[in-house]
Image (cartoon, rainbow, N blue to C red; front, side):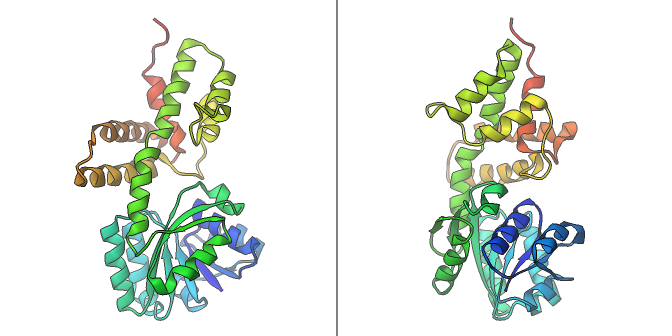
Length: 291
């Protein structure tokens, strides 16, 4: 039995993927209504995070950030249930944050590993996920095999802290994707060009293709944004962490500062809970059309 604590979009996808691959799963979420679809699939629903840990041999924690993950794991009743448990963190953390938390979990008798999930929830749900997992040597095989149920691309990247390092390094590329698509979409709109040509170029053309464009463009064209995927506020938070870490490595950060400001502006316009493609509202809103 494995527990999944936190059943937002990614947590629900992980739980569903595990269930459909034959694993017995217990789920917990502070808002119980979010566990109902998983319960219908066969998941057991725990009434508390401590109860979920007591019922399982291991747990995957899928919360927004290091702070919320720390608060959940080190809450007294949950911390008391950590003894002998393997725990996997999915939240975006810095390497320093996850190493410190791993030490605290070990102090309660548990062992904390971490994973960087490099795809959206749907591929995880459909067993085509990509993962970078970091763990102590004694837990590396366990987590690599378990995550293999959710996708063939599972890379062990070394000790705890390295998955956070990998996530940061990959984010340096990913930060440009939604913004790049939004700029092209805004230009096509301002120039009166057919959006079919944009979709074809950025989703089907191997030279111009931008990862994520197949999801971003339809939302930008319709100006109707999903609310169950990676949000503008999530992106802004992660971008701030990435910019901080890039600065510590001596990398230029001014492009990331500009990108972060675009997402903060989208949030100020009321799109904080919308999919990252809503950055289009800021970029397209600045366009006055052909001159």
